[in-house]
Length: 149
Image (cartoon, rainbow, N blue to C red):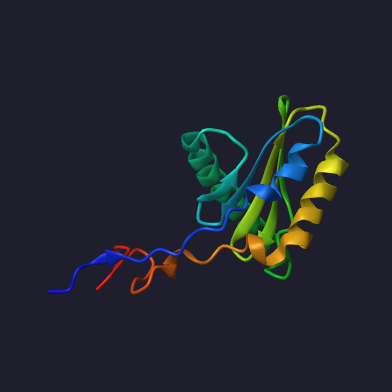
């Protein structure tokens, strides 16, 4: 009888990516998220909030990609999504294949400093921020049971 044992690749700790961004005045939180709505790292919010925000941001990114594809005919890659509210901003940029960097700020943040530091961290860290596809569990396909025989 073959035992079914989960085979899971350990995650890389990406929290160090967030530290320089969090030093900018009026930055409240930062996250590394995946396109499929999971977080890889966050700056100390509770995990339930991080999970919800990751899912919402994945939806926002999908809408941004759909808008770009529809208007520009698929010839333009999405470079940034920004949400502005009276209480602050949310910035999201690609950080590698299937991975994004999100930053949440107050209303008085220096947006140019945030955008610069986000780009700097993405360029500096490159491969460290790339997330493997969710079908990375040995012996499964997307939607599989997560176990190998």
